[in-house]
Image (cartoon, rainbow, N blue to C red):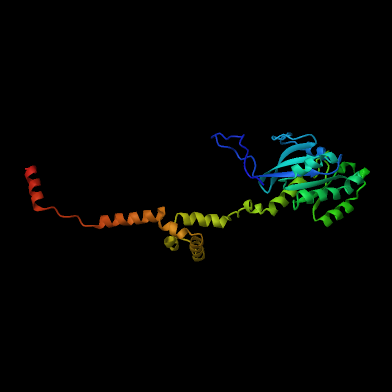
Length: 283
């Protein structure tokens, strides 16, 4: 799994702009004429051609999805369902993070062929997460594969099931997003985007007060006793006590105290010789 940013986009300062947070490679597999190309063609963003080049029988497209605030770029490879491209599938299955098993809900034979593709995946990409997708939901009046049967089959396989329609743009992005979530959770990458706790208003106020008031002066604030106690506890719990001892407020207090000590010192009396010289100059 690669993580990074595209180098082509540059910011105003000349530094590369992060175009995505995660990069995943997905394979669309299934028999011929199940609509894998229709699914890829329905994606509006991304490139339609692989930057590495690909032979005949392989279709390629990229798309970027938003997953819990993180941008996930998907490389989608459509391997042809014809037998003469099985060798190509075995080659492109290397490094794949997810597999999308596609069948046509109006073609019973394509649904029965999923077992054959699962055997290919288990042999050349074992353990790779996968989902089952029934395509061409907009042709439900010609349905040959009942939804309940496909869902029960997916439960036996232990995979997630979707019925999609590229024509209506229904469940296509949702199926990709769910597979990306499964892949990232499996690799433990969810730890990188777990949302941080949003500070409450009380915590923000406490932080503002403690940031400009040393902990030993909190008791002198004109606040209720319970609130002063909470402020001291907040300062100790967040490690602000040691920082405040060297902070601005404490330094100002200490410097003003030193100035006060200097003012309280008695003036040193002048020596008689100096007074004599002064009187001579006046006269």
